[in-house]
Image 1: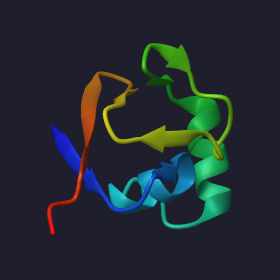
Image 2: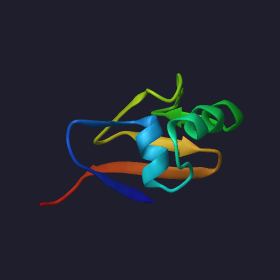
Image 3: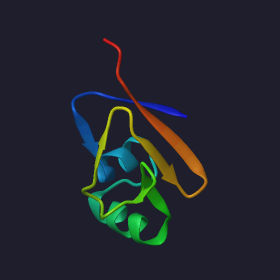
Length: 71
């Protein structure tokens, strides 16, 4: 699934909110601890990990490809 972002990057907690998987930063912190989240095949290091255009994010069995939002 492709996900559009604006700007240089989005932090993981904002990304989870964008996907409506979490509603707050506190929920994102807990979500990251109990789910298998990888960014470009590296385990995500906390809710403040930066996700950039071109990155691939795995959340459990779901794959998200990050693209720039078209203007």
